[in-house]
Image 1 (cartoon, rainbow, N blue to C red):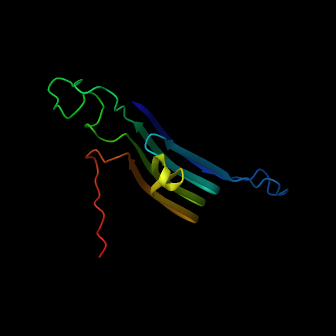
Image 2 (cartoon, helix red, strand yellow):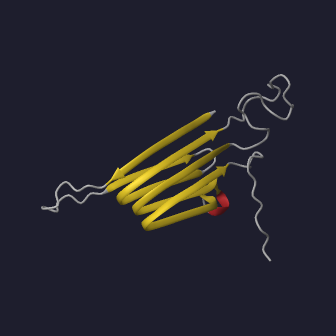
Image 3 (cartoon, helix red, strand yellow):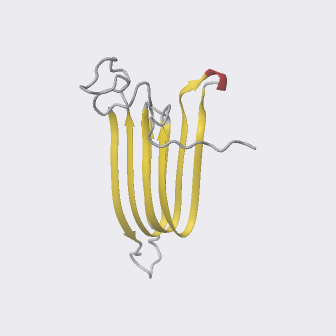
Length: 166
């Protein structure tokens, strides 16, 4: 199983080196980009021109190995499931989860995209896009987000049914 567990807690405060010369105007900049190539998921968290930034970021990404031959099950485990940390068969190929919590005075950019990891010949070699979200903010604000992108299915964890078109 391939995985990344990333956690960062930070607090930054902008203090110019010199008020008299005005030459130092670089405020805090914080950028993070995480990609799970197995499921075609990308997350971007970026803060720029920050006078104050207090943040906690937790990102986990996993790629499940579905190549283990069937029959390698643990004792007492249902035959539909693999032993160990593997999901039910045939289930998801991976996941990207992010918990973002921040207070900022400045500019923020939070975005994610979910796309087919394989290029589609019907789309002239491009990747089919399943979903995308981009949020750009400027000012004084707080951000609390939980983003969960699964490959192929939700593996029974959290399932949200879309509202039908009326």
